[in-house]
Length: 233
Image (cartoon, rainbow, N blue to C red; front, side):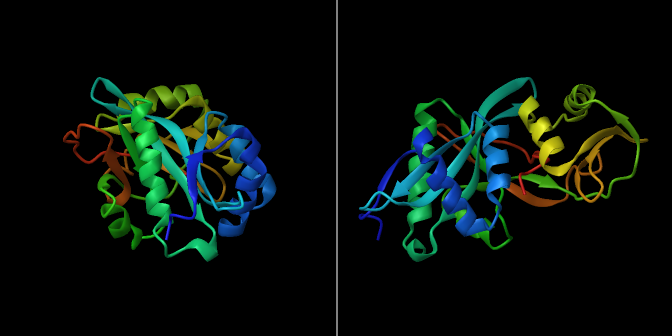
């Protein structure tokens, strides 16, 4: 049942309760969550609260840019979808996602993007109208010459001719801060990698298996399979 909860946009005053719910569901440290919020000041969220005002479900929204040929399309990355354990099995997350999509459409976002946390969730999100739109391989870091993120960004945009998510400066900063990622020119392209983590290797990561899904908000359009790249993991 979802009639005992109220759906609304999150407010700055919700930050402590949002952090607590995130910790409860995903087990991340408070420092990790605080780092995320500080790295993405444009992050917004929608929440569900129960009859006593406690947050029981949340969907985070990160503004994105979907680049298709010469067009840039406002997109929203839905992330850290969390529901309190005692409120699961009531369809609450699905209801909150639909509520979030309606808000996004009114704000002129053209599509929502998400990365299912496990293969079984592809069918769950398909029932909500999402289709597999992004593929990728996971290529080991081949080594290379370190370059700055600005040069990496320019080379990435020049290399990606298929529909893709264009990173913003805050994404590059988060890669560096949260994962210790550095950026490289390789013998065949570019790579973003840390000592024990590889964010992407291009062009080798293009194609591959389903990794992310998309839903058009408002009028749908045909989109060939594209490339998301780094997903918050």
